[in-house]
Length: 176
Image 1 (tube, rainbow, N blue to C red):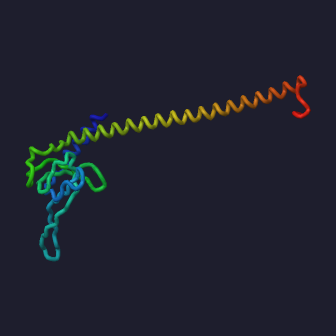
Image 2: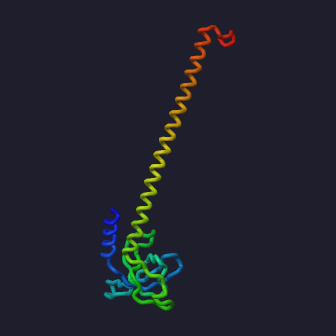
Image 3: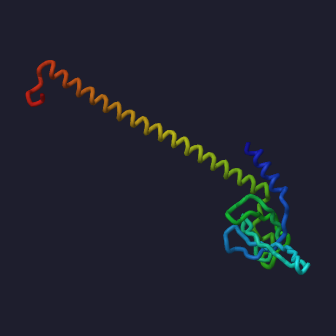
């Protein structure tokens, strides 16, 4: 089951389009960079195209990108409220460290398997929690049943004791 979901997620991630952009900010947020992607917007009144760049917050799992890098990103699953893209690879390094001196960017396969492992661990924790809750509920039920039985036994012993005293005349005048 896990391997089929990994293959499905990997195929989905690889089928996504590849967008090229420039890293605008890096290092301000852990595992996140801001990438500017070029675009054009048509002005119908002037009958002319104008630059309309878009910026995306992109997931950089290894913190390997620096400001000025030209990167390829692809839309992936949602990693946070505003991060919906993941870094595929570095096209050209900006100023600073060369690509070989930086931590490697994980491949799509590594990202998908890591996500699958996290999901499986979460499901295992959830099932253990459900089992623990069931055991706790049954334990509480057993405690309440034991308390009811003890109360019933106590009442029966009191009734039996009072009957025995009356039968043999052991009852004093104050007890009647």
